Image (cartoon, rainbow, N blue to C red):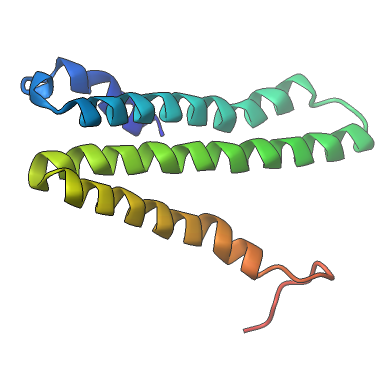
Length: 131
């Protein structure tokens, strides 16, 4: 996440960035915002844990559930940031149509692996499925 964010931070200062289209500029901004939000959500569980480390068992269970939710949300924003970067790079290389296809394909792959697969592998009794 931090490398992605660093890439996005330096990109406007690179030669040629001023030549990108208005669409690419808005996608860049969306990716920058999504990446910053992803970092905030993904780092929050560590800070939350440190500040509440010596709490009781009930509070630890709540902390675990909250941290899990924050991580899932952060991963969604990270996926958006990655897709935006894929759009920017593909737009420069091949144009806006291929960039849109690449960004959507990236979101589909990430969504499938990070969300659909784990949800599909759930069992109602909480036990993992056998292969």
